[in-house]
Length: 311
Ligand SMILES: Nc1ncnc2c1ncn2[C@@H]1O[C@H](COP(=O)(O)OP(=O)(O)OP(=O)(O)O)[C@@H](O)[C@H]1O
Image 1: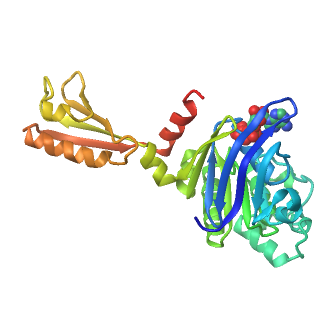
Image 2 (image 1 turned 135 degrees about the vertical axis):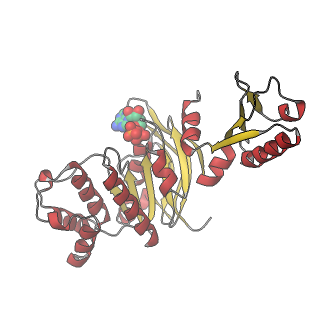
Image 3 (image 1 turned 30 degrees about the vertical axis):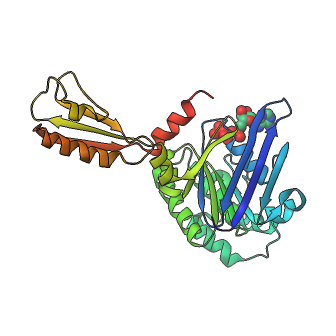
């Protein structure tokens, strides 16, 4: 793993009423990676981000950002972090450009109108620069939140559900923007309910539920480790019974005797190879087939499986 930009150890947050929103979370994020935190409502995603951004005080555990313990260095670290919050929490009567320029100043960065112009243009906000934020559409308001978070050129950017409730066009724009930020060396941590988003964007994925980080892995290994392959082989003529050389595979025959269904490769990533072996075995057994449909489980299947398991 390359240089860590964020190291969270044994982080626990118990809210005043006694509710444990984070439970011994350990997480290391490398510089330059895009990390997606997936979890159902109330899993603790926003609390985790809040703890790193100084909005939530941890009950126990340590957070190191840029190599320094946050407990002593919170302010200097915060100036290198950008946060796009879930909720619109901005000065609605301000014109766009002024609000974004103000965000830059807030972190002690010298004023840089050219940089603000660049950010506004990259988010298609330049034409709206003199509009009051309250007059913008919901999608445009969200772009303003992103512009504000980028205004001080953060090295680590948190996006809390950046595309919840936005249209497809904005979602694609957002993905492109995140791609560009990655190219510029910015580390991005995003939370999302959209597995598609994690699949598209992230290098690694963490799954959180009930305040516990259930697993963290890169996408491909997660899919190989927890994924499975399904295949439907349509036979040319119905079979009454499977010969033993076929029955040794994880297959079953449907009631018509025509659909041979394979489910296997669990956690090995070798399902496709086994389907290939199965087709060879069918040929050797003189069982003709007319079609094969094969599918691997998606990150979504894995996610749903993990969050639905009883804790
Ligand atoms: N200030 C607070 N006091 C008490 N409980 C809180 C507080 N803030 C959050 N919680 C609780 O902590 C849990 C985790 O909340 P959090 O906002 O981190 O979840 P989330 O994963 O971001 O969910 P969502 O996807 O719905 O935004 C929730 O059950 C929430 O009700």
